[in-house]
Image (tube, rainbow, N blue to C red; front, side, top):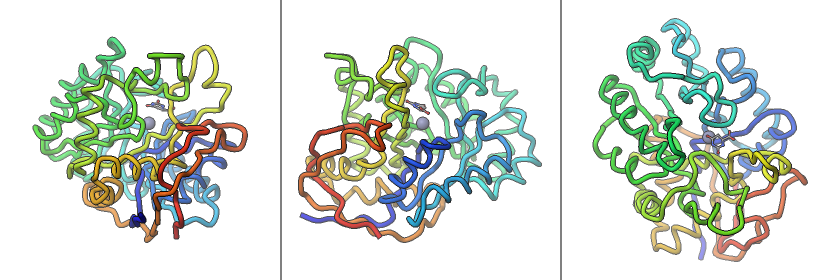
Length: 336
Ligand code: DOR
Ligand code: ZN
């Protein structure tokens, strides 16, 4: 069996910088037509110059592949309307992190006082710049996303014309919110469609599956799966592929992040095929994002066939992917 996908998009992607950027960018650019690139570098991407310089480093790292890096700016509540207007042409979205909640998020938002956030968010709303949110509180780790839902609701209600993307949703509560607020959208990762906390910590600890937000309960995974397989029109694929060097993962104090970029389409094809929903994969990995963000990615046709493919154990001796050394049921035949 063969399928072809038109211009797949990864709407939540960490490409990092320096050596890691050089290793991972071609691995996304090979099969994706574009990706929404996260700004949590050290220091975070907070100026127009930093956005443009990062885009150029990505363009150099992607080599000959056709791949559009859609850029993001790291949210700060002190952005002025004039600054946002100036930077608008260089970015697709602004990414908001609660302070200290995940990798390199120390400079994020430390309270969700709506009056404090209002000037920047109103300007974004007026300018039509979407807000992407890492929605977790500082509470008990399994409850952080569910506890954040009232904040999403306050944001959605106070800024009704602001497009708000709930990033990497992991709970049935977040799925339910999609249908209650017109201006709430979501990305779903590959790993949260495949795993629950059991796969991470139910047996021997699996550091390469440790991420933020942590994978949740079976009923949460079921809700995500149902939504993704139906290609719910407000949901997009965003891998949250988040590479860390092996020594930072296989260590006490394991860094959060699952590296999935080079196998994402193959594993998605397998999942959608297993559930008899291959016809919805195009919408989930491309069409919904085009409509939600109003983007036209470069043309790229990716052909996949149902033939076993062995996922590499490690890339460039540095970064270990999800499903390392395991066989997936689908492989990429061509991408051009
Ligand atoms: O697991 C994660 N890794 N979650 C995030 O939100 C950030 C990411 C990273 O940058 O490593
Ligand atoms: Zn992320």
